[in-house]
Image (cartoon, rainbow, N blue to C red):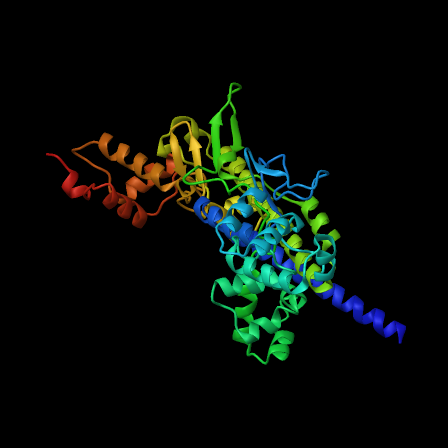
Length: 434
């Protein structure tokens, strides 16, 4: 019997590890192909639902303000605290004098998330309040004070308040709020069985709940505005080489707030809610790792571009572009071609000649033999040959192919004819001058 249980646990553990890896890989691939603007939006969305993402630089003070040694709340900003913000809102509510006094005292009973983590009996004990009045006062504060979810008794209660504020609370999703561990695992089958819902409804409920803020009073710095900043800079250095660097303005510095997670874990007694917080913490870690991988991949690609296109980066002339494709880059970096394509999709590069799109550095070779020659170079050389030929006895396309081959451009007569049309040069008969 013991062996059977151990085996089952081992299988479950391996399955969870596989799912976690898949989630991390999917997130890495998704972020890799994003433009700076898309990345900014993704960060904003993830930060709204995940209190464990920390944007740097980070305030030296506590993000919400736990109980200090004097029993007050630490300041959130200079000259203003979370407590003052909540007290100001309470001052605008129409409450009886006794309820108002109780509401003001409840502000200092909140934990870092904005929850009343003690039980009704415990709160009544140290505030000397009546249980019925306490419940009525808390209910009024939950419906009236922002952000939605503050003054909740638990994580499920916090989500209930937020869904109610969004007019998205129904009996089915309310039933699921008691099993947040299933939401954390995204166990669609178990949710369907619990709520009597179909797969589509189960997925929708998971999405709705995971978009809610599990710690409404944890405030963080707003995500930086990335905008149109180039991701890379490739500039000449003093030694005649190239310096490749990431642009910090296009790569926000994001960390996982392990300290906040430890504090939440210390006060959360509901195992199912704790499972949800653990999922958020893992998600934050996966997001940070994905951002780091994105930055590292773009930097490595930039280093290869600097190596392949050094002449162009110095001169700025398109004729100095060397043949370079995503396949060539992928082979040089030991990466999959699709990975390189995603990274280059929206990447912008600052050069001494201005900001360039990454695809401007991609050039195909003219043939498998002339792998170091590009079409632009071939067209330029063909144009020079035709302009300098004997006008009384111009070259035929076959002769042009021979002259081009001597110059290192291995092209067929048919290709020469096509290239001649591209540069607007007529055939031999029309180029002949009597």
